[in-house]
Length: 294
Length: 171
View 1 (tube, rainbow over the protein chains, first blue to last red):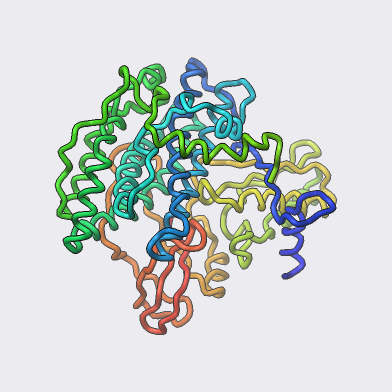
View 2: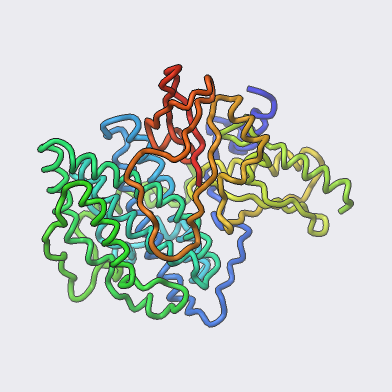
């Protein structure tokens, strides 16, 4: 190790007698040094909720993708899924930090990620289930990334400059995620009878959760020029999904959307059974040791 | 702050190596946006390559450490997100350093960010520009994975010399 590299290492070591830990975990604010003000005339509470929605989608889905680590069929897919999960975690950190800024109650990303209850999470229900197999992983990733890419494409011109910057950055990353997923869906769909059957079954499992991505939302309605109306994304996302499914020799599944509960879905804090389990895993260490750094 | 001191601070910040790609500096990668004086404070602005890039925090630590060692007592490191970092910002010197280390530098990025409306979909692995092998220079190379050890790289294999190599992705 050169002296330069060693200096970088040393500056990261925890400031204790015991230098066991190479890296401290006192996470710095991902939006450090960025102007935190909310633009004039913007409903700050609605902006906070909107950022939670987008941040929770990425946080929960990233965690589900992380659960695939060491279980993927090839090393190349392992690095791909790990990097996709990492990109989404980065987006989640910035969006939760922005939610905390807009809320103005002093909550930071960690408080929002680890110390909210199930019904306070605003993610769509698509991201909650554990994928049954690799076909389901790629199918879900295709739907999620095609939808999020269309959404972030709109948000890149949002009147909230912080949200616009996070989205513009995300567009570049999500393009890679979507292309990765699309290529696998084509390869499996247009592959052997076995892979075709698995891909078709996977899409059938995922499809009831697609409609929810495009539901009208009153938080969005309260943020003109800031948020993107999910209803307006449908044509763009459908065109992408149809292109991929056609190349994959797959039909769009004919499934009824998963019902809302009393008119409420993931965006309102109403989740599927799978959500409790993943949230417990995500939060258990932080809740058991609330003041710990590790 | 006097201009000479600020010049020195700029040189120190520019020379900080990237923790993931130590053969190139922050200036080479284009992730160092500005070094300015605000009163007695040195304010360094950096930008992440990818949203989840874990190196950003290490870079901030390293900047503070080196500038403090050089006698700058009040150092602030800020993050800037917009405009989003592009691989086009890697300098010619940075590209030749990557190449010398066996990492193929990126081609020109497709401009697609901050534009509302449909994003084109590519379904084939074929690229318009071949990625030449950083070892033997052959253009007969194949992408083996779209992602690699870090978010910013993909994995290739040279069909001529059969060596695998990493490639910094266009973004």
